[in-house]
Image (cartoon, rainbow, N blue to C red):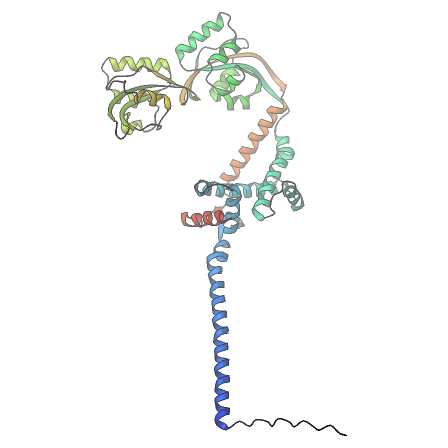
Length: 421
C-alpha cells in the first residue's frame, strides 16, 4: 500500500507591506554591519598610523651619516641598548654622545680599512657572535666586525709599519716634586745609594714607581710617551753613565699636592665653611708662599699666581665648602671645630690629588743605535700607529660626518626606547 505523502507546508506569501519592512530591515542590517566593519578598519588604521608615526617612522629616520653610509634611529637605539645593558637611565644619558662617536669611528675604520684592502667577511662575524653568545643584530654585527678588523689591521698592516729594530736607550728615571728635593736626592745617589731603592721610595710617576725607576731598553717613540719630548731629547744626547742635574717638566702630572688654607667663617647649621685656599705643587713651594703670606702679602694675589685649583682667577681662592666637595684631608682640617678662624694652616700634604710640574733625575745606563725591539714594545708601537691612523680618519676633510638629526630631544627618545628593552 502506498505511503501517504506528507502534506507540504504552503509557501508563505508576503504582502507588499511585509516585503517593504523586510527589505528595510535587511538594508539596516547591511548598514550596521558596514558601519561596524568601517569602525574596526578605522580603529586598526588609526592604531597602525599611530604605530607607524610613533614607532616605525622614528626608528627608521636617519640618525648619523658617514660619507655614503647612513645609520637610522633603530641602529642608534640598538647600540645604546647594548652599551647600557642593565644600567640606569642616567648612565644611558652619559652614553648618548659617546655612542655617536663610537658609531662614526667604527664606520670610518671600516671604510678606511677597505681602502687598505682589509675587510672581515659576514661569515666570520656571525661565527664570532655565535661563539660569544651574542644576538645577531645589525649593531652587534658592526661592533664585532670592528673588533675583528682592528685585529687584522694590527696583524696585517701595522705589523709592516713598525720596524723590528731601532736606536734605544737603557734609562733610569725618577720624578720628584721640587728642585730642592731633586738636588738632595741626587747627592744621595752620588754618594752610592741605590737608584732603584730611592726611586721606589720617592718617585711620583706611576711607570717609574712600578719599575723602581728602571725603564729598561726603550726606543725613542715609547720614551716620548712616558717622559715627554724634552726629556727624550736630553736622553738621546746624554752620555751613558752620567746622572742628570734636576730637569724641570712643567707638563707632567704627579700624585701629590699641598694645601694652604684659612677658615674664614663657619655655618654649623648648614655644615658649611667659607675658606681661603690654594693648592701648590710641592712642599718647597708651599713653604715659600707661607713665608710671603706671613710677611704680609695678599692671599688672593698669591693664590692667582700659584694655586692650581680650577677657578682661582675668578674667586681668588675663596670658596664655600661643604663636606666631600674637595678631598677628605682638607675636610679633616676645615671642619675640625678646634681649627681657629683666620689662622693659616701649615702645608697639608695630600696624595689623593694631582698637581702639575716636577723634576726628573735621569741616568742613561747604556745605548744601542740598532737594537731589536721587544715584542711587547712593538705591540705598543703598533697600537700607537693605529691610534694615529684613526685620528687621521677623523681629521681627513674628505670624510663627511653628519649627526645633525640627533638633537637632545631625539637622544632622549632613543634612551627611552633603549630602556624598554
